[in-house]
Amino acid sequence: MRRGSRLLYWVHRWLGIVTCLFCVMWFLSGLVMVYVPFPSWTDQERREALPPVATERITQTPDDALAAAGVRTYPMLFRLEMLAGEPVYRIVASGKPATVSAVSGQVVADVDADRARRHVASAFPNAQPRHADTIDYDQWTVTRRFDPYRPLYKFALDDAAGTIVYVSSKTGEIVQNATRSERFWNWLGAVPHWIYFSPIRRDGEVWRQAVMWLSGPLIIGAIAGLWVGILRLRVVRRYAGARMSPYRGWMKWHHVGGLVGGLFLTTWIASGWLSVSPFSLFAGSFFSETQRVAYAGWSEGKPYGVTLAAIAHAGHEGAREISFAWIGGEVKLLASGTAGTAMADPQSGTGAPIADAALADAGKRAFPAATLLGSERLRDEDLYWYSLHSKRPLPVLRLTFDDANATWLFLDPATGAIAAISDRDGRAYRWLFNFPHTFDLPVLLRNPPLRDAVVWLLSIAGLIVSVSGVVVGFRVLTRRAG
Image (cartoon, rainbow, N blue to C red; front, side):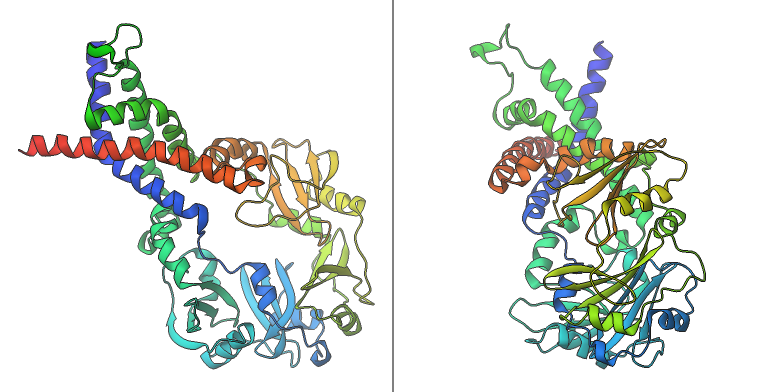
């Protein structure tokens, strides 16, 4: 027992000296992230920045565009939008993006800086875009999702917000933007919090291992600290002066703070460690390409059969984007504008919404070996379907299957899109990571001041433990060095 106690104290002391600095950094940067997320160019921003599709100029059908691009697999993305004044088809198939002119039918293989600048100018009409650089990587475009679009043109808008915009030289699409304020606060927020420094984040596995092995020892140190704190606490046989803690000064702050906020600190660090699924603890389900094609009801050689008249009719009210999708063996047009998205018939372009029963049948195609246990239309957020960093669609159709993973499939009735997939592991992860790390209960999300108060109070408790640990650790090291 004596040797065990000495080991416990030794582990807590030396792990604490190393890890408390990281805890201070993570708590402070986490507070910044509550208010300033990592920069992103969302679908909503993209649509709002696009001019209406000039349907009167279109001469090529969607099937013509697929043939021109040489696409024979089912596209993950297939839409019609404007590029520097010209309607173009955007296609992503087998992970590769392609752009085809809807006027000439020619593949847009490369986009020069001038054409990219004109596209940015159409998206930001009150700005004067200036080509600042051509890059492969920087801090705001470091993840692999940008790889198919590199190199990137970097444009400065020279506006009051100090906005920079990144455009793909391959397709001419805007893929990222960031204001001066976002860039500044993210150096204090997401970048240190996620260990998002570009030399590390460029390699996904290196980054994952870095997060795992930086945060993992903190859990051991925090648990050891809780144990030491309890061992040193006296409630009945108190220390001199009727004190429950033997310590004074910074050590007392550390002891009492650890007893009050140590459990939160431990669960918060542990949940952050789980965010990178260490040792593949949460492998989770994903919607495979085979399932996606089955849901669509598409097979190679099947034409979309969309007419130019249907495109013109669907876009006549100023659609900023017209998408094409298969749902359960049927082709649908999706015209998106400032008022939302409307589903249309591929022959006439008139409104043709899809029924929940048809969506459920399409969902069953994706799980042929499973039984559909239930279909429910959610009109309000619940514990598993809610919005935090991005707005999730409502209403949403939730399908429940009896497969080995107990899968839930969420479908957007407005677009027929697969909104999310959730399995048993994912729902456990929701309680082991999301809740203890972001406090994302719907009751808190509906009351931001209450959630902010909870986050601040708990973070202050964690900072008391961490800052006092840094001071105590520094004193230990200076004594030993002396």
